[in-house]
Every structure is written in structure tokens, then in C-alpha cells.
Amino acid sequence: MAKIISFSNQKGGVGKTTTCVNLAAALALKGKKVLVVDFDPQSNASSALGIFDKNLKASVYGVMCDEISAEDAIVELEPTGLCLLPSSSDLAGAELELSQIVIGRERVLQEKLAPVVDKFDFVFVDCPPSLGLLTVNALTASDGVVIPIQCEFFALEGLSQMMNTVKLVKKHLNPSIDVTGVVLTMYDGRSKLSRGVLDEIEKFFGDRVFEAKIPRNIRLAEAPSYGKPAALYDKRCAGTLAYDKLAEEFLSRLE
Ligand code: ATP
Ligand code: MG
Image (cartoon, rainbow, N blue to C red; front, side):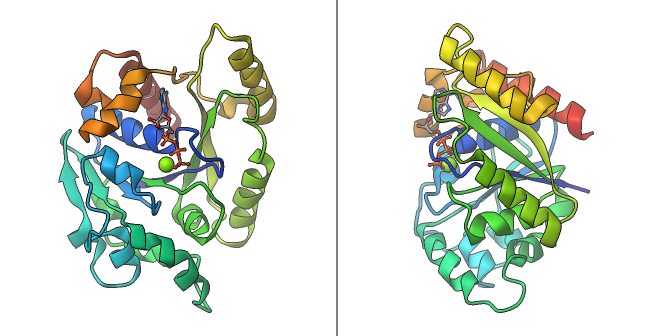
């Protein structure tokens, strides 16, 4: 059975997409089959993986609206084993459309993914920076949530709201969801601020914090403009190595 994992934090720009895409690529390079579901109208995961067409018909929006099956909308990418269910800008309208469904509006993504999940070892859902119905759909479909946190002064702000949403989803919609782990991104072990934030986060999340920290690394920021995960752009850069370590730790937690 595939494990479905959401990458979520309602704070913007903390490294959700970078972590989702690069952890997926690291796992694919270890022989796993991984589907990235781009569930953000910004379509950053799609463009980071070389799919730039924001008006794409075969997108997760089309799947949510029953215009196309998930199977037909999925594209196979490099490295082998990595697949993408792309997003398009019209996903922005899905939140409103979902809100008008009377029964089961939180379970639409789960239903649409069900026919394909068993083709994969992991399904990663890249969430938008909000806690609206798209994120609730992602969490309802998921076995776990990975929370990327940027090492900066306001890092913890909003996290209790995020944890409350996870708690509510667990209570009312999906009793099996848990926090798979917390990933520190843009980490600088030499900076007092980064270490201070790490202390705070460890107080809050204990051993849920992954040992592997993701350093600030320019290669990770450059790779998306080539439409590739960092591992295919620079396989030796600090960012690629950090996501490879994270992949090992992730597998040891989940398998
Ligand atoms: P959003 O909330 O908008 O979806 P996000 O949480 O998905 O954002 P990303 O898009 O992954 O965040 O990252 C935000 C920006 O920071 C991007 O420009 C990305 O390239 C850059 N970035 C992310 N992680 C790193 C890193 N470890 N080192 C350097 N740059 C990074
Ligand atoms: Mg993102």
C-alpha cells in the first residue's frame, strides 16, 4: 500500500515545494515509485519538474472535476520512478467549488486518487500556503504530514493553528493521520538564530524533528528554473546530499 504524505505549512515560502520535489526525487533515485500531486494553484511543483503549462487541461483540477481520470493526467518524469499529477491555475477556483458540495467535500481528492495510489510506494501532496479546503482535502487523503519549517524568527508563528487543523482532521475525518516529521529548511548551523529556532522547534515537536537539516543552498533555488530536481542538476551539491540523507531517515521512519 502506498503511503500518502502531505507537505504542509500555512506559512508561505518555507520550502514545502522544494522539500516535496527533492525528497520525491531522492526516493525515486533509491528505486521507489513516487507520485507528486501538485495541489497548489501556484503550480510551483509542476514548473520545478519541467511542466510549465499553467492552462493544462490534464491537471489535478480536471481530475477533481471528473474531466479526466488521475491515471490519464499523470506524467512520467526523470529520474525513473518519479511521476507528477500537475496543477494548473484554475485549481484556484476549486476551493470555492468544493465549498459548495454539501456532503463529502473534504474527501474528493482521496476518492480521485484511490484508483492510482497502489501503483506507487509514496504519494506526496504539495499543499498551498493556507489551511483551506484544498489542504483539508490533502490531509484527509494522507497517512502523514511532513511540515517544513524555515529557520527564521517567526518560524513558530501559526504552527499551533496548523497543528490544530491536523488535530481536527484526525478527529473528524481521518483518524489515521500523524505528523510524519518536521524538516528544518534553509538551516545554517553556524547562525545563532537557526540554532535558537531549532531549540524551540524541538521543544514543540520532540523527536518528530528530522535529524537531517536542509541547508540554504543556491543550487536548490536554481534547479527549478531548469525544470529539474536538484539531484539531476547538481548531484553533489549540499542541497542534494541533504535531501538524500532526509530520504534515508524518511524511509527508516516509514518502512
Ligand atoms: P509557497 O508557500 O509559496 O508554496 P513553499 O513553502 O513551497 O512556498 P518553496 O517554493 O519551496 O516554498 O521555497 C521558497 C523559495 O525559497 C523558493 O524560491 C526556493 O527556491 C527557495 N528555497 C527553498 N529551500 C531552499 C534552500 N534550502 N536553500 C535555498 N533556497 C531555498
Ligand atoms: Mg509551494
